[in-house]
Image (cartoon, rainbow, N blue to C red; front, top):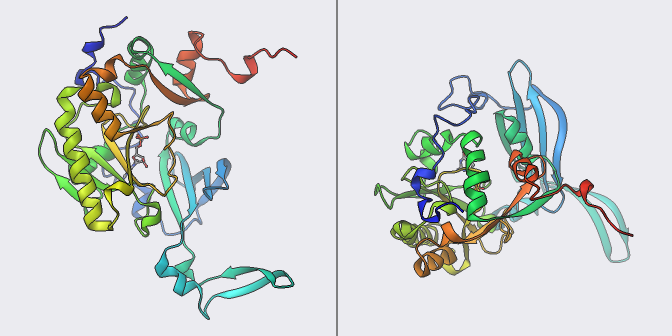
Length: 337
Ligand code: G7M
């Protein structure tokens, strides 16, 4: 067994050693986002995933005369009270589907400003992005501290998502105008801002992310008693900032970390408790209050605990565990009649 106590900030995968996802870089001058105003140059390749409940579709394609793959995520956003007046107006066209006695179904065509779809575009997207959004069978793996050291960590040192977007936020190079709260303390500071998944238009699906200033804390696995001040500071000030700005009580916020995260620079998710945000299930979400309590009970709790995580079959991390016989694909299971 690896020395549990040795899981420290030094575990943060060294960016220079990592297989570079060099397609992304800071403040690209050739970024598609500097000029895109419609989808006329988009060439659809395939639908990666579709979720009727979330009213979201994930599409792989490319843009004409642009190198690389693109991912487009389209999402119908929740209603907000302000837009309801606009929808229930003379400017919305109604087309009747059918009626029966007192019941009638209609298609409603509101004015363009009440009819928006949130579109997230990732370009150029790497194979890892495509894997992330592709519909795939998912498994839960129980990661012991030993598996973390011998399997997960070496994999992360070879392969993980680029953190340039995080650096851009910390260095005020991107999303500066979106910052909701900032604490500049080098040890306990963080930046709180709307998550990529939230258009910040209605609080029903409120979703912010707090990114810690300090580099080198890769994930929940790295957290020890040394980080208690940071975690408590982020919890108290993050909640206060959301209460002040969005008028949601702290007791109505879900504040949590993901394990495994997609991005190995410590960050905390803040979502509306009423909103079933992606990634809130127990195989992935760890409430910050529980994390703090566990560390208070045992400073090296997260170095000693077995932590489950969910992983898609297409993820190379799945193959790492599969090669050791620790997880099997569905097709390999033998069923007896
Ligand atoms: O699963 P994980 O804990 O690593 O989640 C990272 C979070 O960061 C997700 O909720 C993403 O939606 C969010 N996120 C990812 N990117 C690339 C960005 C970004 O560029 N800006 C913002 N504001 N959030 C992001």
